[in-house]
Length: 159
Image (cartoon, rainbow, N blue to C red; front, side, top):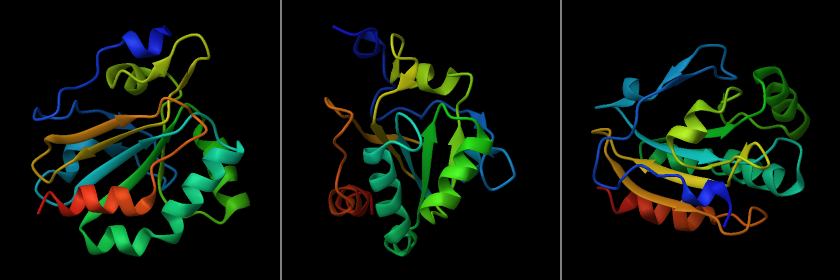
């Protein structure tokens, strides 16, 4: 069993662990700043420029209006540096904000860091407007990801 799977993950029904990370938007993003305003979907992905991560982040970008319609902010989170994430966005035409967990602190906080590979697992954490974690999913295979339709359905169940 990998060390990533033995890490504790935040409990559904509890306040999501707060953090602040640098964003490709140019400003740091603090999770708790969204409380009372929007739902938040944290989409952890292993590494920029890999084929599965590129396809997944492009899908988020293509469907950003659908997430906006259900009052949800989507943030891709990876251990890549912010400059690397910006280049990744540029090369793929992605505008979805990305958060750099370069120090791996948030990946550890959310129990998704694969300590052997030193990057995060592909995982999703859906946080409601009150800041409560309502759903989480960690992929068994990092080459797989949840379809946008499934994620949107999870969000719709919040309202």
